[in-house]
Image (cartoon, helix red, strand yellow):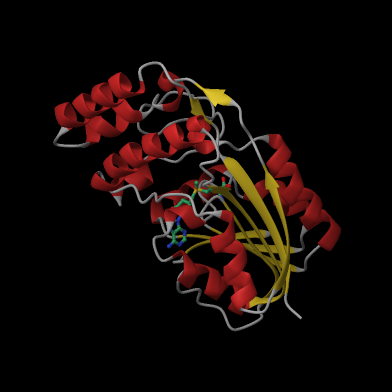
Length: 257
Ligand SMILES: C[S@@+](CC[C@H](N)C(=O)[O-])C[C@H]1O[C@@H](n2cnc3c(N)ncnc32)[C@H](O)[C@@H]1O
């Protein structure tokens, strides 16, 4: 997991791999529009106890802090939790290294449990979601990029992600294909939990270089750097100038009865 600890997608974050500031890419679209949606929801609930699963560097967790009495923010990476404590400490936030698939809190411990852009980093995402449901007494909010190959450009982006994910997984950065919207919503239906679901669709085109801007950084981490750079070149040739597309985002708010 070293590569994961070294690297985190976030908007305009300081990339630990390269040490450079970078812009959000199509593969990590965290636009204000989506962020505001969660913040508005949290502000309307004003939870006493909130759990943030997969908090990363804590950059988003601190935005939640004015709206809650107490926040527990967990991430499976100790290095990122250390960074949260250093960069994003607040009196009402407790950062803990903990696996979202095994949340060490009793049932119904939190009145709101949320995750933002973390489920697609967890292969056993159903285990994590099940744990989130267990420890929530009432509200759940999730925001995830989703897969919808409704156009040529969306299909190109899916193929591009497959290549990127193969490299990321080789170097120990856990990152998986986005779930289709139905898969997520049906999970809640199976658990007999009613949800509000909204898809923020985007057909915005992204060019190849922007999409793959951090590919080289990951390739550097691999003992097969040349192999990956060759694969990137052949993918570029295959695409032959055809464009890629941004992902859609699913916002799901659930309420346990
Ligand atoms: C893209 S980051 C999301 C960061 C943050 N939620 C945000 O919105 O800025 C995904 C995070 O999920 C974490 N993660 C991956 N697997 C996890 C697991 N099993 N349990 C908890 N966190 C996990 C990663 O360490 C990473 O920090």
